[in-house]
Length: 276
Image 1 (cartoon, rainbow, N blue to C red):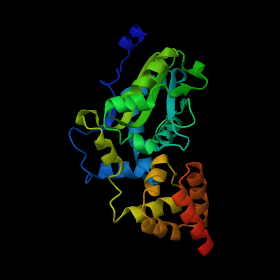
Image 2 (cartoon, helix red, strand yellow; image 1 turned 90 degrees about the horizontal axis):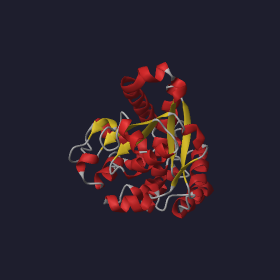
Image 3 (cartoon, one colour; image 1 turned 45 degrees about the vertical axis):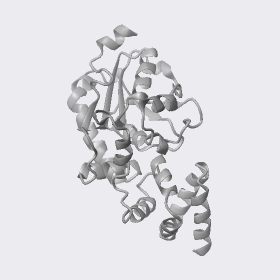
């Protein structure tokens, strides 16, 4: 185990490759920060943007190696929550762009011990370790053996999830582990910055219109973050969004609301359907 880790080109916490590094505080006025926040709640144009940028970075770093022996490479797709996260869709799309096989990494229990929307609010590494400890597994882990693993995620903050995934991956016989993320926030030493980054595009005067746009767009994806933030709207704003949703959007959102037990969304959607 130790010799495997020592010989890898990438080491956890030191060689995570990212498109952006946040040194101190997240500047919500930056365009990439706004696009990242929209991506987290399922905005499809932002997903395409990050898919292209991440694919380009991966090809730059290890494109030659992948091209030489593509059968030796495997993309890991993290799915710790039942409703797919933005990073799940990102990794899935990139694996297809790279023409590589992929394998889903899942939670051992039906949902993590804390909803994904709340995980980013945890302020200490100790809390994060306790929250995510021993909740991941590979189905068909035999496919990891003797493979070079590419792990794709949206952000790198405390490294707790990444470290667990790396250790599990090596225990299943992987040869190497290559982590890639959009944003590296590890230097901030303030895990609350992740929550600021996630919500950068959700200014009070814009979030209603943004939620309406995403939910009505058939190309957009309902993510865990979207459901989380949407359910936190006050009654007035929730009503404004629901009144402007298409019938298809109402049906799609209601299925997720019931699934995630967001009763306030379900009640508002019921009232909206009756008024249509």
